[in-house]
Image (cartoon, rainbow, N blue to C red; front, side, top):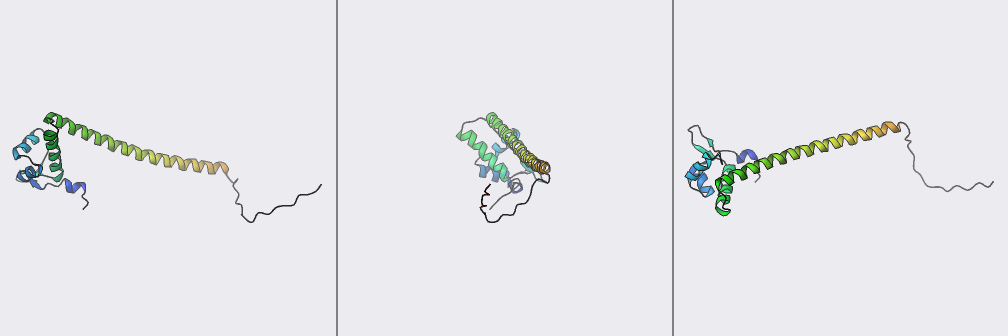
Length: 138
């Protein structure tokens, strides 16, 4: 099943469910929220609601802190750098697309210019069998 970005950002899980899915205590999620490592949405009753993307981020934070030994300041910096990297990749992709369009436009201009230079110089030649002509004697 293919998910789109909207599905990943849809608020689905209350704090207890999100904590269980991420393998952490609910109080840990509150700490992560205070440190702005995760930003759950809120229901009308002000209940924290976590999306699938939030749960994936929580799992990533858990991996960094438990398996890699990174402290929360380090996690915050890693997340900032990931965001910056993603933004740079998006900019680069957009620049590459602009370059492809510019190259296509330049190619079209070159072809049009070449056609104008040749003007009527191009003549259609009908192809047929090759015939050897006899030499004329002088």
